[in-house]
Length: 260
Image 1 (cartoon, rainbow, N blue to C red):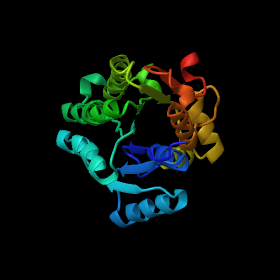
Image 2: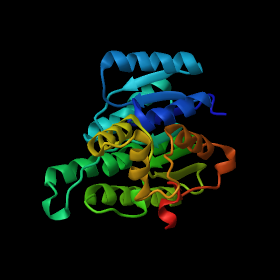
Image 3: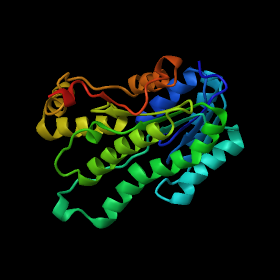
């Protein structure tokens, strides 16, 4: 379905971003992956994606907290792969602290990566999308773009900002063949979350399954994690003709979290 389309997925060397990249590649899209990690491991991943899905795959290590690097990611993709048809803004960081103790430098870092970088990559990608009359911008916000939790001021503020930016871009591109939507995951089972589960199990001397249920029960009524592959499947759908009139919306994938 996405053959001859080029997708940029930020923060895609592991976790949710890698799941998104895999599903887009499986649908035929060429990829620009981005993120940090061991150079040899990332090169092996790049080659594996290319050979498994038969698509072109490039890698750019851009630090999205630096404005010139965020814009440069799009410019590099245009040079190496020829276009940016699909932009998935996935990269994000978290810091937990009460507002009155929140370090200013951590606030700035979270806002820079979670919100400002989304603006910068979108701004850089839009001219080409408008010229071609087709584009899909998919912002991975969070359930915290729709509701709040204590001690996550910067994260919640940034993700609410992403939801607002998504709506604005959707309105500005409504007649251009471009859509802009947000996916808002709740708990997603990634290697980082698995570490939290293992730590909780060890700390409280309970089984891994009990730790999973304990972690989920506070917020996610389904008591099941979403998967990166499910999020990737939704991203592919948002790129389809069936979703051509879906724009400016925020789609929770949260097991009922925001239905409470």
